Image (cartoon, rainbow, N blue to C red; front, side, top):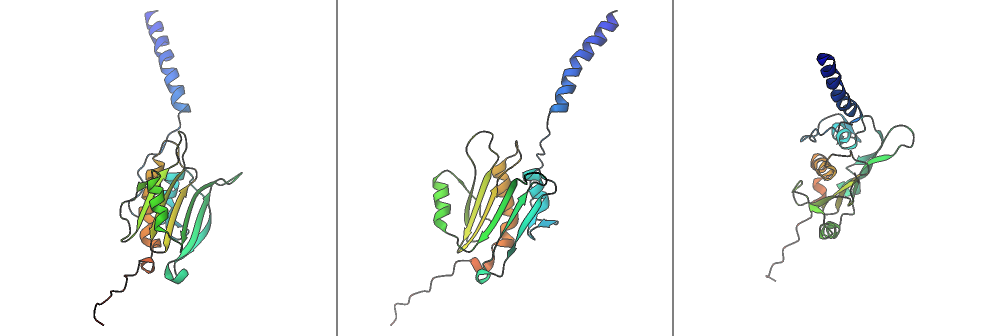
Length: 193
């Protein structure tokens, strides 16, 4: 009788724990890659990074980049959606020849975190949208006239979404921010005349 009672108590104690584990969603907290490797989406964005930060294994992808356009500065966009049903936008990356340093300064003044130096001569910032439960985050990098922006519209709950956009910026900026975007040195003025 004692053995039966002990066994019953053991089962009653273990069953609730097992049930909780089945309902628990596992969050992939694998760190973002530190090097860009194939396969890529839109020619430059590592698929593994996209999968980690969005939780979408096989995203629907639209767009591309033309690094020879805009006088060699490049331009384009890559938009990634969840597959199925409503095709919710999960990530958007844009490269444009209309960079403005003041935009970075304004974002930092409003609380964004400055990006570390990723590309020589470039400055940037990143932030997560305020509010608990929000999984969207944004990163911006400007060098000369080139502007690279990342908008994580639907990140994985429980991951460091702001850290993910910063890590993605580190992976893609060296390829997308071209040498043509470097600010030109101002001509020196000689006092001889």
